[in-house]
Amino acid sequence: MVPKQKGEGNMSLTTTKQLLLDAQAGGYAIGAFNVENMEMVQAVVAAAEELQSPVIMQTTPSTVKYADLEYFYANVRTAAEKASVPVVMHLVHGSSFELAMQALRTGYTSIMIDGSHSSFEENIAVSKAVADACHPSGVPVEAELGKVGGKEDDLEGGDGNPYTDPQEAKAFVEATGVDSLAVAIGTAHGVYKGTPKLDVERLSEICKVVSIPLVLHGTSGVPDEAVKECIRRGICKVNYATDLRIAFSKGVNEVLHENPETIDPKKYNARGREEVKKYVMDKIRVCGSVGKAK
Image 1: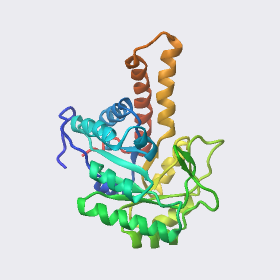
Image 2 (image 1 turned 45 degrees about the vertical axis):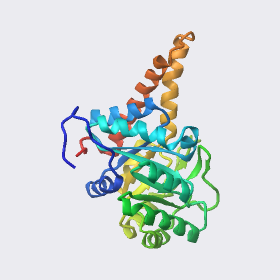
Image 3 (image 1 turned 135 degrees about the horizontal axis):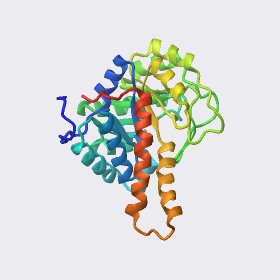
């Protein structure tokens, strides 16, 4: 990818493949941010441009259900074409082979299939099927092994022993051919009650036997130093979702509190966009990807 000067724009969507390999080699991570409207897309790209960082924008099945794949894809593709930094459009927690294929046909440049709620064998089967279908188009696939707790949209994290087993992770990656793996080390989706306790030693053990980039889900509310430690131990992609909603809503609520008579959505959405941009810039710094745009 040819480096471009800030403001040149015209950079189309890219995939996560080389971005995550570069992050893995460089000891940093790429932030992946859930986007749910145009203003959040604009905020994420503005933050990435200001810090010259690659960035991943992602939508959940629930977000896609709210509008559809094409609406969100068009938003992010337009932002990418105007951007001077690499931008990825990622389906996060793809809940079925069919949805993954819809995202592939729409133009998403990175796809996650989440079979973690199924048996180990069923997870392998669906993850391999999605990888086999996406790879001929050059689209990388993320899978999940273990259960990240909590709830994200319609997704329940599940109970029981949630942690990723290192030897299972090794066998899973070898059997599926996926490009990155989300691991469960004690994080949870949604808002934490108290401070999460992460099993970073388990992460190191997984990293010893799995060569592909590793992904951390459920990071909203995890202390920045804990995230940095996970990156030092091999995490290459860090997902943020709940805190973006909180930031956007904070901006909107501030405007409506200051002037309850406000009826122009542009006024309160603009404040929400500002809050999201500030949050994303902070997390890009945590991930260590400032200046890594190529």
